[in-house]
Amino acid sequence: MNKDKMARQFTEAIPHARALAMQIDHLGDGVAEMSMPYDARFIGDPDTGVIHGGAVSALLDTCCGASVVCHPASKGGTATIGLRIDYMRAATPGQRIRTRAECYHVTRSVAFVRATAMDDDSDRPVASATGTFTVESGA
Amino acid sequence: MSEGSFVKPRGGRPEPVQVVKQRRDAALNALVHGVPYIKYLGIEFDRRGDELTAVLPFDDKLIGNPLLPALHGGVTAAFLEVTAIIGLSWASLWEEIESGRIDPQNLVAGNLPRLPKTIDFTVDYLRTGLPRDAYARAKVNRSGRRYASVHVEAWQDNRARAFAQATGHFLMPRLDG
Image (tube, rainbow over all chains, first blue to last red; front, side, top):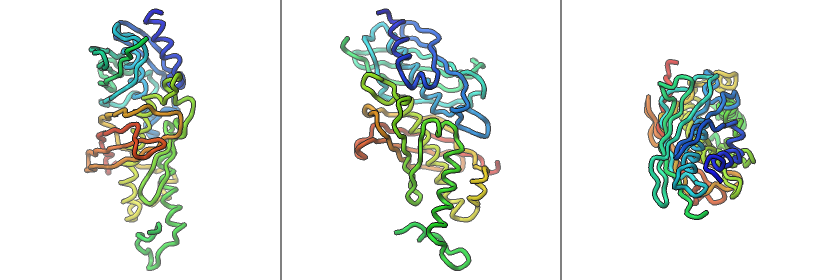
């Protein structure tokens, strides 16, 4: 099965990714781009309508995982070991959240990933993440 | 020690326990239920005095790996972050309510304080989140006028075996609005 198809199945088979209506926008070698629509159910600050950081985290985590799965050295699924997220600013209400993750180094056991989350203004990221993920050894 | 025994007598006599409990629970409910995303995930807070335990009842939509099955790492992160924010906000509200500076009726009427904003949040995934209810508690390690540092632990069946923990820094809401 090709990497592209595998990663698509990987994310589309994830109930929580479906629940948040996450979609894959692009996949490359060790690179993934995913996005998620604005949804009033995911508001974290009722005064401003800004999406909760937790929902942005879920998208970043999924996108990071997808970048690991489509890295040439990956043989299967993955799980998060650690994830740090920096929140630079509030995402603008009403706009899609887009994330881009890059799996920049893989050892036999660990994949290292960095990612960015943006809204319509790509010059000013909403959040950035760095994470470590497991690497499956078998088929 | 039973709840309410710390409460300073107002007007000379201690308030009945039920009145005190009701006031505190109403304030907590107003804080928690005002946030749509908390409702979406189904998180509730169990209160014993000033201590809160967040409860995340299991639901199929929280699954990240359908083969195991396991909770989604993003759900775990979100659960920990919600617990940290509510825990931090509650700790400062508690002081305000007990000292009489804030009237809980005001909170229930929708005049809620601004919530702390997450600056950074680091999650440590210790073991797989199983497809059952999860619990979490936050510990405010430092809460200053502008910044706060909070540690959170989440567990499932066994309190001593956390499945995830996190540390985060938060920007406190300005008191002058």
